[in-house]
Image 1 (cartoon, rainbow, N blue to C red):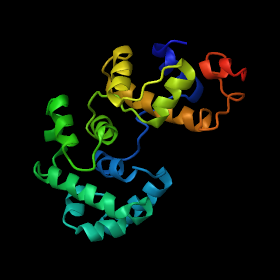
Image 2 (image 1 turned 30 degrees about the horizontal axis):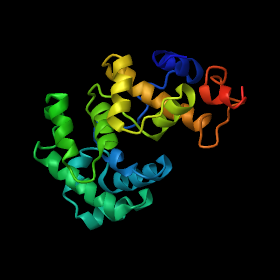
Image 3 (image 1 turned 180 degrees about the horizontal axis):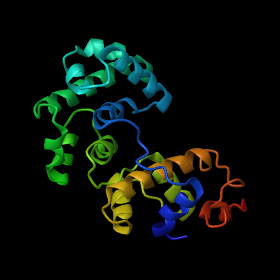
Image 4 (image 1 turned 60 degrees about the vertical axis):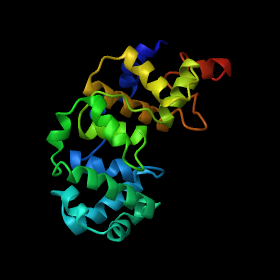
Length: 219
């Protein structure tokens, strides 16, 4: 199977997952930080704490008015809460410069905005690109551990550099926000369901087209 066929293959298996990352743009800004080094259930628990305390509207502005310690208390279920509270506070200070108006950020060129996000302490490439793609709807592909795993197992492509992997996908797929959102979501869904750390090759619909499965006689 060729890389440019991955999207349609995964979509035929899992159906349309749409935007995939749940929540409003404001919520996604927050969950992009909270999801670092934890599972989504813990993120949801932390977000419920935030919504219970602050409501669902204007959460960025409301969170920015809280102390780092108060934020840490609210997001405790997400783990590493002191570090994440500091990172969230720093992101909120950045957003405050734009009066929490996400439309102002959307109007900025992608490269410039990405550079600004990457200067924020605690925001790496994956988090920055998740914010850009899902919250601000900029056409940039998000790379995570699941992407690397599928690349290696299905295609026997071993790349460790984030930018190299991103460039590879963006060379095969046109700059389309919905496509990038859904493709990233489909990769995550497939990795969780079939291509986990201990792969379930016998159950995987791609096993006859997968390098790892073929090489190990698992199809």
